[in-house]
Image 1 (tube, rainbow, N blue to C red):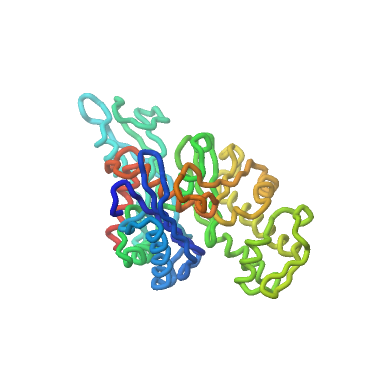
Image 2: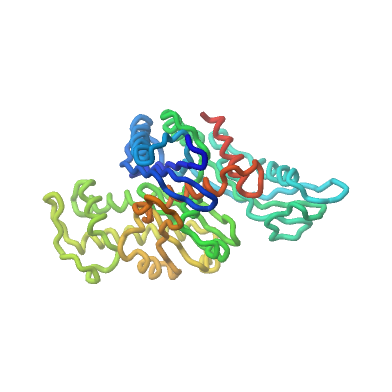
Length: 399
């Protein structure tokens, strides 16, 4: 950005592009510009038409710039799509100095070793996240620097992405003259906006149900445990409504947003017959279709957990966010379907012209800003935050 202490984030979603510009002073985020425009050229989180996608991003950025009066020169960009995958890896190095003290260079060595996983030529690293360290077998160490020992172990969560998919996204952004501060996996960004520290520590699953994908992140003991991306979300709900009720897709989308609910229809206050743009449908039928698809998405989210005893894995339950979590009754449906605590996560702790952003649909955009404020200016390879910056720079090679 052209002003020191000002950050920008661009959430390139399947249905909308959200650009947010904010002044950052310490831990305070004051939003000074917002631009939200419909997306074209993307499908299920992937760029399918570079020119259309670039134009959608351009319009969103212009709107934000017009609001704040600054030119967006660089931004934090979210990444999602079925091409994203993850795995856990362990690495170990010896501490050979005479004083046996763990130093920052030892962290560098052990994390470099963790990066040594073999990847196919069409995949590259997106994030390497240290989940925890062990010194001479003593596990649960969060920051081993300054400790004494003969051996340093690290357990990492490694996230990879398809080279071509990321290249296409980078090309759209850089084609507008905007540099990329970092590429951030979208559920990690959303988590910054809607999860509490207690939830991360005890165990929680975040499900960001957007337009084209449902992004999943599991946190335990204060660190990431598992990530996944499902290619089902709001688009599939609308498609089911359109097919089931014989409606044009745009009309089905409008009806879903205006009248949609996953609560039993007799609990709603709407009349049974609805009309939009000359198309009439039964409210009961509309809600039945939506509820069936949302139930399926919720069950697919649980199936992505690496442990069948998910009640023990995520005792704090599930936090739903993303635009599709605005459906009335979704918390109750989630609790009844999954037998877990469920709440809808809304971005908070932001100020300025941010009224529109206090909505689950903008969790990723706000989270990207919070991510940037949290990690900006950290030294490469510094505990946790430096890793994100180091690995994101790998993608400079793709441009």
